[in-house]
Length: 492
Image (cartoon, rainbow, N blue to C red; front, side, top):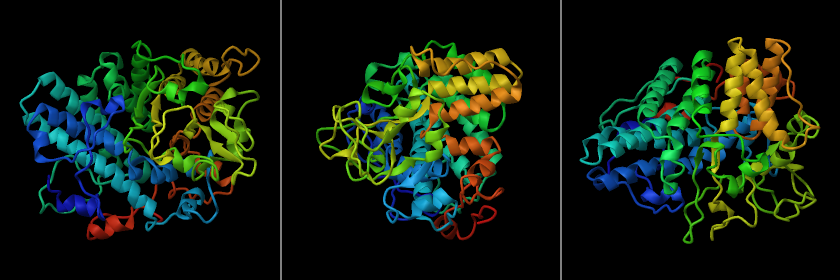
């Protein structure tokens, strides 16, 4: 077993979390993970290098990385969602909903630990795999995968907290606590990792069918485009999204209502999604779906669509029905939602149909993949970048391509947007992002980068304070463990 440094214990792994983690066989991304511990043997062979890389993917489906805390920070903070469930259940999530969150909120520490656990696993691969005698092409690819995943995890951290400790190497046990790097330094590291990954990763079509879900050149470009968008680097956004759109790897052919079903996993719509598996023995899935499923019928009922989201859709937009479950609704699998459900609405994008693959452990071990980056997002980023750069025709073309997929064969709804002015087109693109990507963990961070989070959220009664609530407080256990080396965000 690899010993973990005191630094990670102080900065990233406060509590009983261990750097060692369940890994899996190469077939993990074919939905056949096999649990193993990371040991020294992982870094002595080609097989071990693959298993160590798979351990990073394993971390993505864990509770602290992409379940409760992730939902609280990325979704409940937005105007799309509310806490849901029973009023007294998991009351700490209400603090994200109302922006009363403090540094002692346990969800913050969970989220911090989840991202840094993944980063620790990525650092192992990046630092230790180069010395292994193995196929050089595979070696470069595995390091590229680790760099893309590390970049994504740091992207989550920088959006949530601003500057954070930048840890890119394994440290010895006596290494001092690492202070926060600047937000700019974190973005620079993310960009470096993604550019390194782009240089070596295959395109999606170059992977065997058994390895769908691994990091690809298109996914790395997509994340770099998004990272560039958050920094206002519009020329880079336009270049990268155009390359993705011209790659022939992705399209908008998957019907919107299919994207979030089992049949919609890893289609031409998908750039990157967390792979979950319903194994006969259990243990391959995630609680992501369970915590959002209908309270009193299937799951816990958290992260429910808001009334404001319900009212935001254009008349007849079929994405509304594909996103929002209502009381008494008959679902596509024939299930009728109970009339007395605790909340009026639930997240259909987290719904697991009765006719889809299920784990013997129930919905808490769900097979449902977590979609993180979709092609429609790429096309809308392309539209926004083109508009910012004065290329209105390209912006309109990309925007209307997303609307065309949503309307399907019904010409009576979602008419093409006609360009009027740059500002009007920007508003139309922002509105389209909300409709297309609702409940997909983008809306709050979109509002922040657009500079209108306070205006939008205060209008709904949320206690958002400008200059403070754009980021979360640094978790107090991390500050304490660092001996005060970590500093708190303003206002907290």
